[in-house]
Amino acid sequence: PDGRLYRGKTGMARIALESGVKVYPVAMINTNKVNPIGSWIPRPYRCGVIVGDPIDPAEFKDAGDDYQQARALTDRVMEELAKLSSQEYVKDFYAADVKNSLAAGHGYPEGSAPGEGVVYS
Image (cartoon, rainbow, N blue to C red; front, side, top):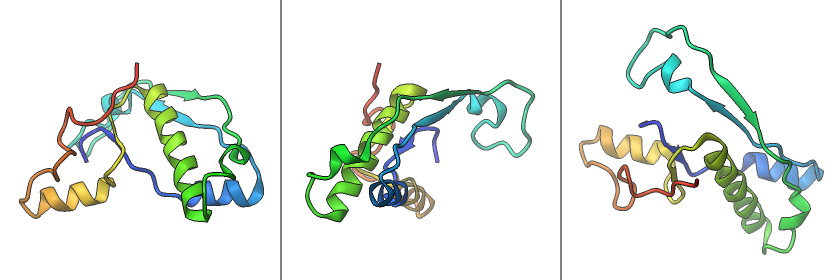
C-alpha cells in the first residue's frame, strides 16, 4: 500500500519445494515512476527488471515441517527481492493487513510504520 515490500505468501515456495525447481527472484525497479502511489494514469518511463541468482529449495528441506520450509524459502526470496529492488522490507506483516488497518483508521500496526522495516544495501 505504500511502496514497500511486505511479507510474502508461501505458494511459490510450496510449488518449488514439491517440484524441486530453483526459484529466480525477479525484481521490477522504477515502477513507482511509471505508476506513482495514488495515480490511475501510467506515465511514460522505462522500468527495469533485475534477475537474481537462483535459490535451491533443497537448502530448506531441513527447516522443519512443510509450513516452516515454505516460510523459510519465502522469507529468503523476499529478502533477495528487497536487496535487488532496494525497497524497505516489512518482514512480519502482510500488505493486506496493513492496508486494512489503515483503511479502518487504526494507522499502521505496531512495528510496520515506514522506517521500521529492513533496508538491505
